[in-house]
Image (cartoon, rainbow, N blue to C red; front, top):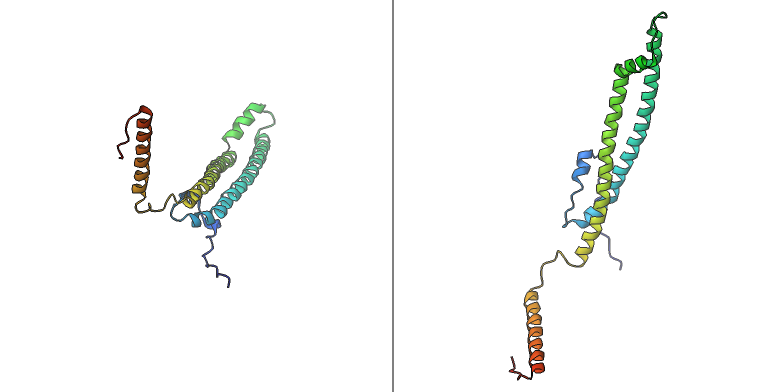
Length: 181
């Protein structure tokens, strides 16, 4: 008769996590490795997909800056009286000081900041996956298990026996008598 599989709660929807929660989820509880392994893939996917979305948002913000700067340049030229000469450098200076251009650049800087955080988080989740692999290997080799009762004594007995044999061999080579330790 086949064994009935234990029902586990599905991993939480990572779509609802904030970046702070994702950073907090990096911690690995070595006593809950199975749960950490189950959650690793959805959490990594959330980070990677959010990073891709932000990179797309950055491209849109760059395009927006170009459009805002162009519209601002046209507006500055239109507002300049026909008898007044204005240089390209003056137009660029006025564009740089324009509120709409500043807002667009600030938005791009904010997106770049979030991209940097998510990029670092993605790398941290890669490292977490590698660490989970190592921790599972340690678990499988009984690294976290309690020591076997009497195991230390057996180790000491083996070491003592090897020392006795080495002494006997040394005495035999030197022609000494074996005193039967």
